[in-house]
Image (cartoon, rainbow, N blue to C red; front, side, top):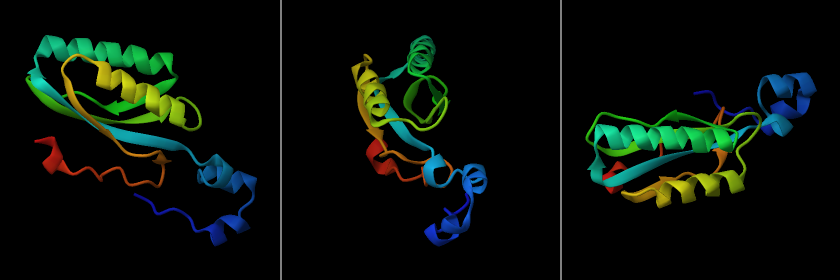
Length: 130
């Protein structure tokens, strides 16, 4: 993963360069999450969850990467990005509330909003997942 350009470097860039590098006013925010189910989801339950999740993401102009697994599924994770621009805090809260309300969801963890191009999304403690 690339490192974020320094503020000093960004200050020398024109608008086109900042847009190309997703920097400054063109920064795009996203978040990642993981879910734990109890009991583990069967294949049919997992399919129903993913179908409903896709509908929810599309309704909120969001996209998801990840999410899935092989049945029985106890854990799943993903990253949420906006259709255009950044994910808002309101969209983040909507997604988390929907996931927490899903039957069988035991735990939901999510990162704060962070830079999708330069952020580090590998920061969950997997000890909590077991």
